[in-house]
Amino acid sequence: MGLFDKFKNIFKKEEKEEVEKYDKGLEKTRNNFLSQLLTLNQNHKVVDDDYFDNLEEILIMSDIGVNTVMDIIDRLKKRVKKEKIQSPEELKDIIVDEMFIIYVGGDIIVNKINYAKEGPTVILYVGVNGAGKTTTIGKMAYRLKEEGKKVLMIAGDTFRAGATEQLKEWADKIKCDIVYKENADPVSVMYDGVEKAKEENYDVVLIDTAGRLQNKVNLMKELEKVNKVIGKLIEGAPHETLLVLDATTGQNGISQAKNFKEITDITGIVLTKLDGTAKGGIVLAIKDEVGLPVKYVGLGETKDDLRVFDIEKYIYGLFKGIDE
Ligand SMILES: Nc1nc2c(ncn2[C@@H]2O[C@H](COP(=O)(O)OP(=O)(O)O)[C@@H](O)[C@H]2O)c(=O)[nH]1
Ligand SMILES: [Mg+2]
Image (cartoon, rainbow, N blue to C red):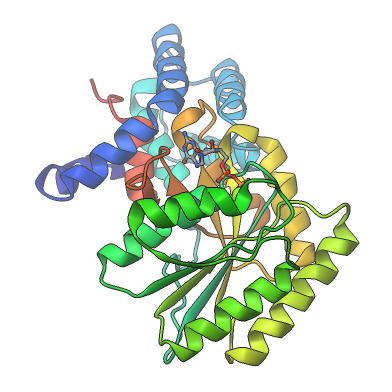
């Protein structure tokens, strides 16, 4: 039995709601990718070079990333040879398996938040303008509050007009505490917020940051300062620095991730707007080409649309209907 059938059996019994969320969120990607794959299979009686050329193109079009696609194709070719596979029908299961393997590799995937053993856990959100940082913080705060945690949001983006207002709206909507200061230096807002969190025993602190400082060096200096100030108040903080990436930007997201990795110590990725793109294959490229785990995915704009990333549900969502 291939992985797809395995996932299908598991998900039939449990986690229905979660699976449906992924299912819906990946609809655009699946409609594009899976229909092309099925057409390809219909048009080819045998798995030959022409088949692989076409498959390669389909995978690249889903924004899986050229290098990652090459890896997948290589592995598929080896298996075809070894297992003497002839028809595309037989290859279907193996494509699912290999896409899963390319993500998981030999790694133990950790997408849990590294919570502090004691005191507040501080999570910093970075990423370019419009990636979805503020929205993600709103959704994340909602999730954590539902889990019973005492959550504080800090409006650390003091550059962008309206950014503080936007976070305040979220705070209102989900009834979350927030620290903000108009016309202030971001580091001073963060200082006040983290200090409050420490004194008033908050469980989790979510810090919003500005998307862009004129250049890489400035951003690096700013984040160094932020890390130093926060780390002085709470040992080990920030416990997580999550890079927020917009899935609809495709391969551009990959280069953003590589850049940010050089600027600061990124501990994970939040991939937003997966619901709004047909190029959801970017998840695989991030892991393979950037080497960072996707910890959360955004599957819509409402408070309920953030999910812990789950590769099994993702793969299932991508291939749902392949067996029909
Ligand atoms: N469809 C969809 N839209 C999203 C998602 N995450 C964020 N957005 C939208 O993307 C836009 C920019 O988000 P924002 O949080 O302001 O980005 P920031 O500049 O990084 O803080 C907003 O209109 C959000 O509603 C998502 O997962 N799905
Ligand atoms: Mg923002």
